[in-house]
Image (cartoon, rainbow, N blue to C red):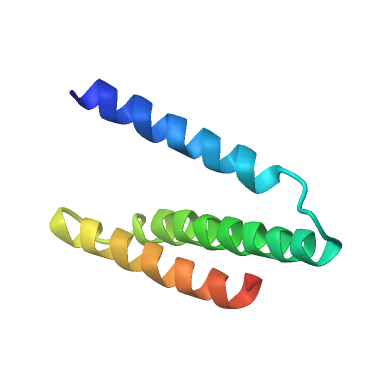
Length: 83
């Protein structure tokens, strides 16, 4: 069952990427799409970096909390910067 879910999630991600990268009908729509992709990419990158930094501190359950907090903080900061 988990393999089916993973395969489905990967398939949906690939389909979304193909649709997002397709050319838009107008230049304005293309610019908007590129902005949305950059915004999403910045937010995800910020979450990864924040999580990696948060993971360097604490121990045990505290490390998990700091990792999640770092990921959330990084995502918010990157979203504000990239959007």
